[in-house]
Length: 621
Image 1 (cartoon, rainbow, N blue to C red):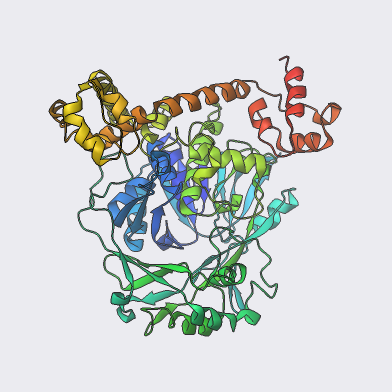
Image 2: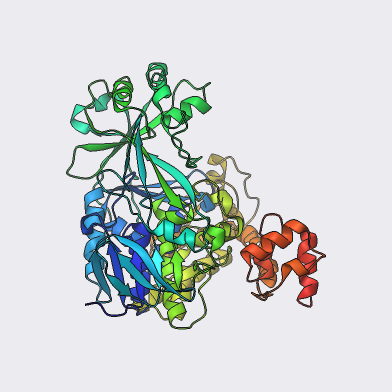
């Protein structure tokens, strides 16, 4: 009935979809197994992609041949570039999506791929022989064979939903939990844990008083995520902002005695950076209000997502409190918020290619690794898909360094440090964030996957080469351009910058704070004429390279120093317990994680600089 697949992907959320596409685009024959074909790429929580650091990840996924950026561009209803008032390293794209169109577009693109098959059924176990994964077992007793398996189960592994004192099994509202896999993996020696996440109530937009809320429009000139020729957004739907107040807080507190968060029924570890509304009130008791983002779920629906009001309190308490929010006085609720607990597996049990250490050809990606967020999940799925293909074809793994991508930072953090709470990406986690900007992901990453042999990248590579040449041409022109005090001093005075006394190179003025190319083209005709032939994204990329040239050079020097340690490989079978010069904590951690390189070893918590010196001596340095 089934062929032997190269890769079976279990779960069709954001991680599973990207895993299937990545392996298929490399040439693997893929089976995507899901409990419900109608919920492929479902946006289980907020209907948005991107955000601070997450937007950079979506652009990296796109640069690596993934589909998240393409799907978002086809289905978004609003776009904003966040943090534009800060430096370019902090600029982060974010889009509101049409929830239903997003899932439909993902399914359409998956079904159009000749290397992807589908199977709708619960996977209840794995076929494992001699510590090697050989396929999956399903709920009706089928055995489907494969050369590798990627588990992307999301919140479905023994999922348990909480609403007040009520609890019931489920992977998300209206869908049953997945059972069997956790029990099998723990029997094999895997360590598992429980995590918790939550979602807010959905309300009827027809019942809200929009005039009583702040309007949050999209950008006047919206950009997009994908580097491919996706459609530009020509019309947008606004979001709105409202706030909780003391009356809301007092009403919510009446349900605290029935809250699974506070009475011990939820034992899973919740997300620190996206707490429930009851958690916010409890932890930040001094605040008399909290911001809420009132977000539409699509073009043609009245359903509204109340971002910032995640809750597992009894539904009647949620409803009464909602109606005390300004603009929500007559709100009708579609469904209450809830918390969900689920199984995860501490990611220190993985190699840097996301393959498990205990079982060969078995890969984990997404929330099963303790992360939270569509973007974090999608990026892991993509990397697991690439590496599953490489493994079954006996090729070297594809590992992104911390200096290559936010995705590299994410995976490096997970496998070396683990996580005891849902891991979310922030710009502050990346030490090389001046290099890892959202505007240059294609220049950084597309050549890397092209070298791997991914299909369909010829046009992308042509664009990358063209972009490099154009950026170089702009930089060269500006470095050679001279400007006079007469044409520039009025601008400098307006900007509060020192006037020129003599003719200078344009680069010296551009390097000043608050002076940009948009300002300089107004005063210099030669510059204006030259830049007219280039698109805005390329101009901004060149401008960033010029303005931050010194900082970029310093970061590259730091990367080179660190890369020397990354090139010193450690034997996988090294007996760390036999190295008595190491600290006892280092012996324990190194034996558990088995780092591939000295560089990786240096980032393991508990491994000190003196321990690294011992390892350097061991490898002959």
